[in-house]
Structure formats: C-alpha cells, structure tokens
Length: 330
Ligand SMILES: NC(=O)c1ccc[n+]([C@@H]2O[C@H](COP(=O)([O-])OP(=O)(O)OC[C@H]3O[C@@H](n4cnc5c(N)ncnc54)[C@H](OP(=O)(O)O)[C@@H]3O)[C@@H](O)[C@H]2O)c1
Image (cartoon, rainbow, N blue to C red; front, side, top):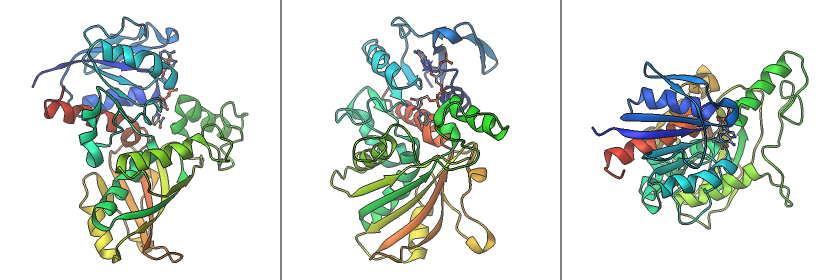
C-alpha cells in the first residue's frame, strides 16, 4: 500500500496524542509525519512507531508536501490554517467545530454517511456526543424512520481537553477549580460551551444541527441538554427518540447489534449496561437500557456510551482517512 505524508496539528493535546496512538494501532500507511503545536511546545520530543519526532510550531509553511492533515487544535487554528493545508494539496480532517455547519463540506461518521467525504477536500469530524449518538439513530432511521430526538448528555471532563482533565484531578485533591465554573468533583454542571440568547448552550445547538445534517433530515425535530459530569473519560448520552413505524424491543436490539460499530449491552438485571469503564480505550459505541418511552407513541429510550477521545474524535478521524485511502480517494 502507498504511504502518505501526514501532519497532526495539535499533536501535544489529548486528541492529538490519541490520533498518534490510533494511527499506529490501525497500522496507517505513514511515510513522513509532521507534528505541529503552538510555539510553547516547539522542540518537544514525541515517539511514534519507534522513531522520535520533534514538535514544530505551526506556521503557514507547515503543509508543504503534506497529503493528509489531521487538525485538533481548536476552531481559531482550524479557521486560519485548514484552508492553507487544502491549498497546499492536503486532505484535511478537522476535529474542531469550525466547518461543521458549512453546506459545502462533509460532516462524516464513516458507518453513517461516508459518501459525504466527496463534497470537499476539507472534511469535518462531528462533535463527540453527536458521533456516538448518530450510529444508533441511523440504524433506527434506516429500519423504522426517525420522527423526533431528545438528547440528555453526561459528558466526561476529558471532553474539555487537558484543562478539563486537570480540573477534575485538581478539585478531587481539594484545590480550587481553574477551568469549569463550579467544583466538578462535587457536582454535575449543565453548561458546556457558551450560552446563547435562547437559553441553549452552543454544545446543545451543535448536537441539534449536526444530527440533522448527518442524517440528511433538515426538518427532524431534535432537542438537547448537555451536562458535564465528574467522570474522567467516556461520555454517556440518554436518547429519547420517536419512530414512524411500530417496533418490538427484540427487533430493535437486533437492528442495533447488526449495525457496524455498535455493541449492545442490555441485561440490566445482571447490572449489564454501557459504562464509561467498559467504553474507555475502545472504538465501539455501546447501547443499553433499551426500553419503550412510556410517554409517547412509538417512543424509545437508549443509553449510549463511547470513548469521547477515541470514537468521539481521534478514531473517527483516522477511520475516515483510512477508508479514503482504501477507496483510492486520496
Ligand atoms: N476532547 C474531546 O473529547 C474532543 C472531542 C472532539 C473534538 N475535540 C476538539 O479537538 C480539538 C482539540 O481538543 P483537545 O481536547 O485535544 O484539546 P487540548 O488537549 O487542549 O489540546 C489542544 C492542542 O492544540 C494546540 N494548540 C493550541 N493553540 C495552538 C496554536 N495557536 N497553534 C498551534 N497549536 C495550538 C495545543 O498545543 P500546545 O500544547 O502547544 O498548547 C495542543 O496540542 C478542539 O477543537 C476540540 O473541540 C475534542
């Protein structure tokens, strides 16, 4: 297989470090690797596949000869540098929220809408909570037709990057919080990203818009409440959805279990349901607590857990790139 010159932008961050780990685990055909971060990290040494690499400061010249650029350094960095990488001839897969709403760019989860990679050389990786939710929703939409979705999230501290992880550890040790607006070791916080005038947070609006875009259903009614919880890693999402056609729960379990990327864990009496502990370090989306919603016709409740740094960010990006390589799209 041909090998590719790859840049990782934000290589010192939580997602960047995991991108490197996943590239290696997936045996990605890497030729040259360029590791980029802010000036603060320039000169740091990072090991990859037995070789040492020196982290370079990201500049406009960083993308010379790069064929695939994986961005995970926040929206402002992506906004400035992703178009430069594309102009230099690279395929960009961007973990930030910068381009997700652009109608001329794909927002892609490979098991759900891989065909959308063809829209543009710049491909957006969706929000972490939306990635894990969209797999079961797509499986259900294919079979029964989705008519409504309501999300409640329980998001781990690693979702806020190095600062979020440190704040959980710091507050557990009795120190004051520096990142979250309250002591995350002692409370759930129903505030992720900034609040808008209608009372929704930006994170909630991201989930709503991204769900409609990936399912190609602009009129689907979707709502969301996003909450940070005192868990280090792996997000949980409670999904209430309504379906067009009637269903049996056994049929729903089979439909979900046969969808690529999903594992059903649903034996509550044996204490078997998805947990962060089970999801950590894996690339599956785990679904359990599957039951009828007693308040609506054809309503269904699902508890969905996945590793937000892996399937919610790094692994999804690498899976997009690997499938593009395999299908000769790069
Ligand atoms: N954490 C998650 O669950 C998750 C999930 C999905 C998407 N994302 C997205 O992925 C991106 C990274 O998140 P993260 O959690 O990995 O954050 P993080 O741990 O804080 O890492 C941020 C990375 O960006 C680099 N960076 C910051 N400013 C830069 C600049 N001006 N120029 C070059 N590099 C710069 C940092 O380099 P230095 O070390 O030099 O500062 C670091 O490598 C964000 O857009 C985030 O929204 C995160």
